Each structure stands twice: as structure tokens, then as C-alpha cells.
Image 1 (cartoon, rainbow, N blue to C red):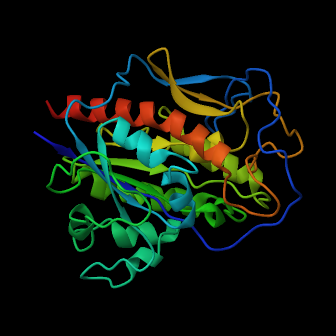
Image 2 (image 1 turned 180 degrees about the vertical axis):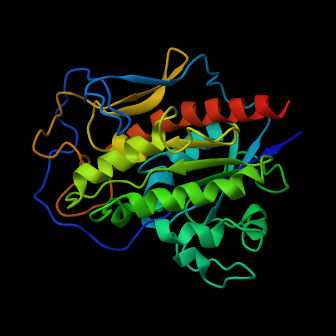
Length: 307
């Protein structure tokens, strides 16, 4: 039996400012992480989940990747290699980009900011997303298994790393989505934390929000009783070579380095060139390497919860 999956990833159109950077030529000593806003010291690596299975699914999983320009760069083989890695792990890729229409919301593909997600996660829009089969930036090398998508991965783009003077509104939006997710436990939902910009005016609060989203004990999912929603801290992975959200020795770990490579900018985009807020190929390859085993682990946890 083929298993189907959907990834939702978006990108904004603005570009931040900043000086040119050495995109990953430096590295920090192995760090540990502060993955939540509960007062843990930066440098403490946190085990989020233990004893996970990071192997690829046995059956082909169909993935719909909803994205804008950052997603286009991430999925392409000459940049982030995400599409090829997904195929290698038995995921068949379809895509949604700017201009995509749902029957109940023409051009909703243009609207993927954090504030837009309540407009997506409802029974008017999501059936069209599940059925999507379009391609934009990646051509599969494995066969289409047919059927609807079953895994939903969603991400807003880098302008959403600016959270303003409070993260209470973002928290309320993410918490509000859980009602839809709880009603659709036959689907797996994966939040990709919005990526950082070169300069983030709200950097400390942005870090705090990212930590809350991945904190399984005191954060976003602390009171959520089901195993069909998980996060990927794309933001953290792109802020330093030694910042991670990945599987290590069978455990899902989250690490924020206590010795950042760019100590003046520990909470902003590390992998960039010039003033372009889109992550470089090096950053995207790092994200791919960390994400795929994590996706596999989440898939197996979700499948186990359904048995």
C-alpha cells in the first residue's frame, strides 16, 4: 500500500539588509541547546524525543510541497537537494506555489504567512491540497503512487521571522490550529519554523518563539495528546553551523551553540551572501541533512499511533 504525504512551505518576497558574510566557512565548538523559553541556559542540548526510528518508509509516500522562492531553492538539486533527498527516502514530491487556486479560495497559494494558516486548515481548502499533483521546481525519479497526500508540512517564509514586540499573537495562531489537527488524526502535520532573515529586529523574541514551538514539554504541543503534529526548527538550523534539530543516536535533539560562529548575530541568518535573505545552498543542504531523518522519525511515530 502506498502512503501519501504533503509538505507546505512558503516564502515571502522582501529582502533584508546586512553586510556580506562568509557563508559557513567558520564553525563553532560543539554546542548545546536552549530549545524553549523556560529559562534553560543556551548551550544545553535537549533531547526532545528518544528511541525514534529514522529509517525511510517502506512504502512510497506522496508529498505536496507548498512553497514560494525559498522553497524553490531548497527543493532544487543544484541548491538544497531536498527533492532528491525526499525521493531517496521514498517520498514522491508534488508542489504548490504562487498562483495556486483552491476551489473555495482562488490564488490562496500567494498567502502563506503565519496569519494566513487559519485560512488553510479547514475543510473547505485542505481537500484540494490533499489532491494536488502539480510540479514547479522538482521532477521525481520515482513513480507516483497515486492517491491523496496524507502528511502536511507547512512553513511561512523569512519575513515572518519578524514577530514584533510580542509573540502572544503568533502563539495564539499556532494553538488555534490544533483543533483542526486533532480532528484529522489520519493526517500528519509538520510545522517548519519560519527561517531567519539577515537582520531581525525582534531576534530575541523570534528565538523565544522558535524554542516554544519545538519544546515538547512546556511549549506548543505540551497539552496536545496526539502523535500527528511535530515541528522542524528550520530557523535554528540556519542560524549557526552548530545549531541543530536532528536525530542523533536514535534521539531527536535540539541544539543552540553556546559559542556561536558569529557572536554578534547568534539569532539571525548565518547562511547568506550580500543582502539576500534567501539561505545559501550550503544552508539548505544542512537543513536537508537534518530534516530527512527527522521526517522519517515523525512518520513512524504517527504510524505507530494509528495502530
